Length: 361
Image (cartoon, rainbow, N blue to C red; front, side, top):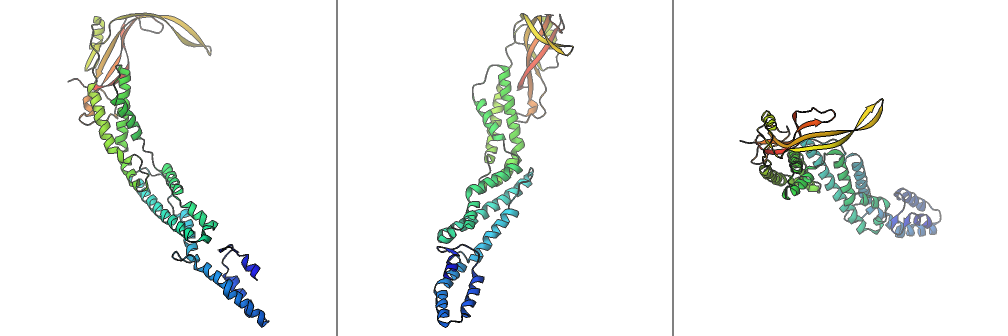
């Protein structure tokens, strides 16, 4: 009997299921034992050794509940984690994100409470500290597991906040000395405009993300209002600083050509140059590619054109509405004397590079 009962325990910890049915059967067997002296000895052992252990097992951990209550709570947590915890789903609208944020906050609150409870139980009881089920309960509710779960749900559900990163890059470039070339400056300004437009577009998303601040998952949401203000002011300042290149004299045919363009301002920006070089391109013939070289001879004059056009997505800036911004195109007026596939003997405009500039008044 003692060997059987001791086999149920490891130190003070029950190694098997609830011993109550076996204990009741054992008690009945002792009561029915035919030998009085042996029955008395078994009964004393039962009362002094076996029954106190069984009673302590049922009582659980003082201050935290009986074993049955603790088991009920552990199983309830596992069931809720499986079926009731927030699941990944599309959350793209502000309301959808706020709803998900509320569910995740509730998940964090309950998981934190579960972790605090099981940690205290395991600290108070050496027996429960060794139970695999309780070790698993504590591990599943620790901060890292909880944070990883929340991040996973958010990553699969909510569009990422990317505007702040691009805005930071643009602010650094705008704060640096601006390059002289129109192409480099135009690239910086257009990237900054795109970053600013993204901040405006993601403002509702950032406001919804702010609901996640309570669980440390708000990201850069809190930075959006100030970042939008700073980038808008810096970008407006730089746009106002853009100026056209110095005007130079040009052949009358070029001046006439520029005058015919639909622009609010056109000028020659570099003196007449004569170019004579060899170019190579590829020609397909009978399904094969062949290279050919030819001589290219032309005159060229650098030009800039200001046109009252702008990209549809161009946003208003603080103190600088989009309607006050024009585009400036840079390129060349070219007249070919020799060249394959070129119009010869006539000036034409070849425009490529563009950036923004204040519209001329």
